[in-house]
Image (tube, rainbow, N blue to C red; front, top):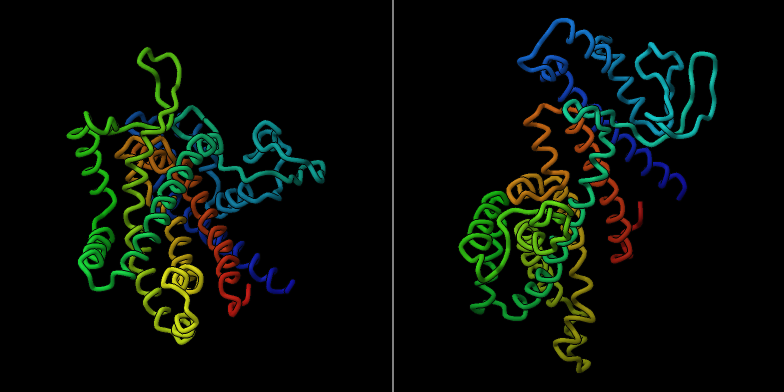
Length: 358
């Protein structure tokens, strides 16, 4: 058991290292000189050298890569020389000093994503802290809509197999999986936030907190989460309906279901007490994948609806060539994706005892 847990942890760390390395080479090596991108049209040779020294762009690529990994690792080594890149200061890295020599210091800390190029050196961790909760809230609300409606409509489709409502739900599922989220976002925003505004009272754009009419204080606006949640939940809703219908029909044809009917159980008792649980394994797997994907897939939906989440922050950072923000946000999403998959493995094993937990 200990060996399996250790193997799972090792695989997780290896996956995170692979993601971090890929992001580094995609955003640091391929685009060109980051210092030139930061200066844009105001390029000056003297300013260029100052920026390269400040952010370590004048160091060899291998050294930049090792410094980048060193910043991300919870256990990292830093210089005590103020002239060196990666000079340890408690205000920047924080954490606890475990061991130190005359030149180096070993620190236990949270991953350091460095600072923004464009927002006056604002730490990436602060940007993520401000925007990630909104993205998680949007993803949870979307999955809640998808799960509740998907399971309910999947059961309805199963119990009304080949009737008009079953055909309608299958058509809806096909359209839901086919239509891109950004197109649905534009359509819903225009139709429900503009055409039907007098009836819905919903805004075309808006975030969880908005300034009041006087522009003096922030107000909580729960209604602004409705449209982006529905749009983001359409595709997982369609998948859940199709999966549950298919698996529930298969389970209902098993021998033990016929035995349950023979014992005098009603159709509702058979479906909800026996068949449903055994039909949920593929659905749980799909839900996990979709929930993790929603953290990344919310990028365009957040941008279209003006929802101030991590996805909208990524789009704005790409427009401004603020590479550290993009790198930090993508790493955060990757981390949650991996953790969610581990949790789902445990849930999947619980639902089906035949599957052993890795």
